Image (cartoon, rainbow, N blue to C red; front, top):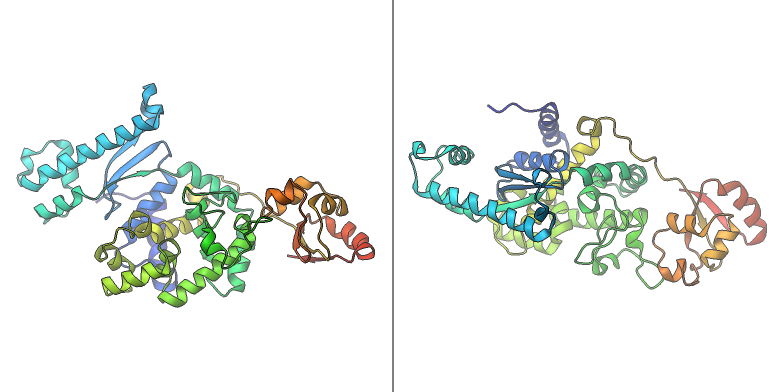
Length: 387
């Protein structure tokens, strides 16, 4: 039996506890999938590619480490893609051989290693099916560590929002999967912010116009994410499906439930065939569980890690419309500080002199309280409240 590291043992124990007591539980059959993502987030570099089975991610055939390749050609994307494709072809060749070869004495060492990844009773069709399921996954340890450090700024406020919405507070860790807690993250498809809202979905919960895009605001977008997740849960009936719907869409999950005749996520993953229900959707919940466990035990995976301190600010209700220059002068802060505390503002406000609307809850530094309350109460009647 393969020995496990202390971190892996802790993960296994935690997964058992989650199954017993937690609404964010691990569906039967997904334990190995979660452990695979724990490794992606904590062991494998962005300079590595994990060649594995997409249906059974823990079945790792090979790891390409570009850090060990001195050839300058491997710095280009095309050369790296070729190396990955060559490795996939090599694995396919082995699996093809295993389709017809029963006598393991006729296999070389690498072929026997791959054969041992399958059940002793595996048949030709199992190896044939595996040939179509080879996937290359990029490591993420550097990005995940940076996200952990950055998350310290936002997690306390985010957890408070989920608690107010009467949802599991640990849902905040879904932001590790979505964006590594990077507020200005933007996907090739156009999803924006910590919670990666598309414009079509974001406009249901957030203000998105020429003046501001609240998808970029980690606090405001968390409220939106909480409400979307609550809607998903009410529709699907359990958190594994509700969270998967955050990636795949609630209508897509409805179709998956109907086709698979099950509300068990692991059964859906293995039964439901759809071009749209691909690798990302199948692994989304497992990624969340792995991220959650790491975030709850950061020192186990990143000894000595220090997260950023929680962001602090005061909320000011603007009784009139102000330009950012006028607001900065009013509260004796720089425009840059106001822009940083209010990341929803577009260039129209931060650079082109458009006004922040009346009634907007402006964030200002904590120390503004004494100056602002005295000055503004006699000047323009702005109220200052705590978060």
